[in-house]
Length: 517
Ligand code: NDP
Image (tube, rainbow, N blue to C red; front, side, top):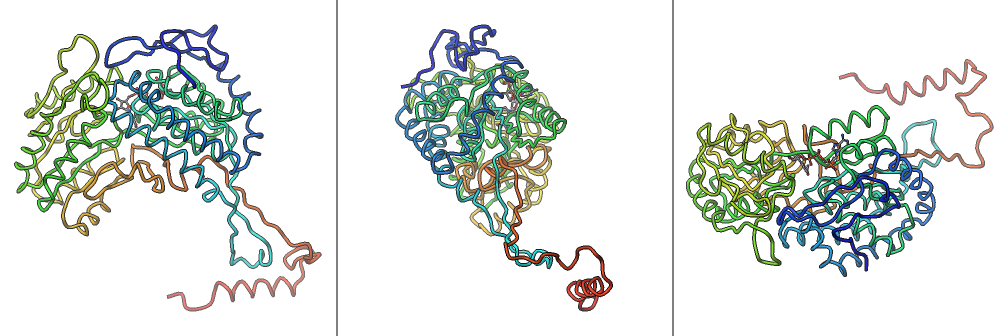
């Protein structure tokens, strides 16, 4: 069984001996749990050379050969899930349930999904054309792996948002170098070790541990970059990718709105507001970050949510069922949350639950917090808070709710609660977001058949669905002319008056018939 060694410098990919080390801290306890090499540009260039050398053999295995190894990876993950969950918790401080439901179950599903669907999504497509000049020829659209993919991941979901993006890239036949967040590298290292045990050829998948500079060096080496993180860093990555003319797929920040209409099932809406704003301590790009509630049900909704949020337990996870809200993983995030709450209170907001970082001897936490009397002059309604906070705003009607929901630079996800699902769908269609749920939230992420991506400043491109694997490929058009073809085709040299007139007349007949209207 693979292990990630604790309390000692990590050696992997043979780069550890000389590199400076980065200490990995458990945010729930403050203890150092491991250290990993801080890899520089030279190490990344060497990794890229190895990855490129290994890629053709991996591609040559075909969908079946690659799928077999990915399915072994699925079983490996499930058989080692206890150790896996412990590793995720040790570097994120998240609860057992957040690690198990949103990371391990995603991983298990993703390995199987891409192993099964890669051959379907990337199958050669026979194309028909109405163009006269290609009549009688075989036209094929083919997806070819780009070669070497770079994946840069954040700290909030070390499996789902980091390793998860490697799986379709591998299934397509690419080599991959993954740069996890410096805060949470251990989960990726463990899974890479697991895939090696499952027969993944050497250097097809490598983990580049390091900080932002390591990520920047990776963009300089790869044929395509998949990035998840902040909009500010995403812009830098997109600029670097543009300089090299390589494609970039970006999943960035969000400020997801929830709209509650007066005919909604309020008990369901309140449960969803509580869970999807506080789950993973609010450190999810598609968590509910703000709620707009129609005036007639506002008081009842606020009362229900406040009561539910006050009942949540926050602290260091001690196993299943111990706490609902775990640690704040990223040290600077706590300051952002405190700043947003203080800014709101200073501008007139009232705190109905939480509102502080609890006093603990060790670890980093924030109390699950509900705010009312909020408006769009406050950061908590307009900037990504990424913490266990839910500001709730009263609106006159659905028109005001839609206008305020769209009043954001972000556009990742949204949710609408109403018993009138036709009206809910009509409102969902007007929201400027990549995914909108009616009477649900965030759940679109689990449907790997659907694209998941952002509008506006929330990103470019998407993960999941056919586009989520085709982006790791280039498209090649193939035109095959049969063996028994004319020696010379009608449009070719020498130009002759008769054939040129005939062709011109034919195009006129083909495209110029009928009235101009
Ligand atoms: P970043 O966007 O800075 O980090 C994301 C990844 O990019 C990390 O692996 C990081 O490395 C790496 N990176 C940093 N600089 C560069 C660079 N110039 N070129 C290439 N890669 C780079 O996010 P933060 O961790 O700083 O979080 C900031 C905010 O982003 C949070 O407060 C939150 O609002 C948002 N966020 C959004 C997420 C989402 O799912 N969309 C996930 C996480 C955060 P390293 O961590 O080692 O510096």
